[in-house]
Length: 449
Image (cartoon, rainbow, N blue to C red; front, side, top):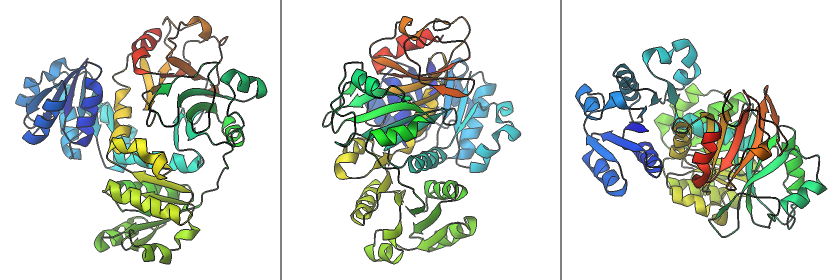
């Protein structure tokens, strides 16, 4: 697959890195020579120095032969222009990174596809959506919804209170035969090894486990895992960044009580005007006295989304010391994900990973409508639409010949989520959620082509 990426910033570089691991034909364009040299030295890709809105540069990058053009520069206007030009010059599909929330909310009415833009992505909006979902599922440290929650992926670390610790998957299924969930991935405590569970796989204390469940199964999971569903109402956000503002707006719409702390006075007043339902405080959120003055002890959750990863992590640890149960930190360094549980922060989120996940589904073969990478794990969760006459149609799951390093987490049929076991027959139009390790992705894709 020939992919052209415009913008060698954090999102562009990370996307190029992920795609290069899969031997895709990648071209990276940017005006900054230093960014390109870094990418060229570390990745097996072609780099082109120049303005991505230049027709000459796009021709040099063979845009007319591109299967996908991804515009992720820091300029929203530039990204839209690149996408429109690329589509007019023959690119098959285009994706533009934008920051204007109104564009996302009115994409259908504005008809971006008519201009030549197939998809709009906003890392800030993706982060805000992720934060809201994590607060809704407060006991879990990772989550993702398929088809508006018909199926939900949740991840958490098993405590000794979990009722199925030291039981195998098969034993747990016998003890709890009516439960609507299936384990899809496990990472043993203290390791970075990702395990796709089978019937004889034993759950152990300290495991980071991911499940797929139906709407009704979430409450059952709370009970069985020893987790307590904490009602989150009062939320404090540190940082008036775009992510902070969009998070506050999303939480206000869901009737959370939100306090936002911003150190820049002018910016704080501007945010207060734009977000009348949010209590905006002008101050340095790293100052313990300010947090005390703003009654941090009364908060149910603390979210740090400043532009500095270290500040966000330290602030969350400070909140933890004040007995805040739920903490979420925005980080830029993916390596920090391995440290999140050991240092005490509930969840780390990364905008470039969220953006890359959204873009990645266009790279996968078959009709992939949703995709996420599991935090800290070397595994992907993909949602395929079953096409008529594909290899999976009218076959029972047990007869599909799935690789051992993959597992079906569930199926959405007619809008309803189903935990599908071996004798479940897949039909055209079904949406099948599959978790798989990188080595099995190509085999899984072939089933849905």
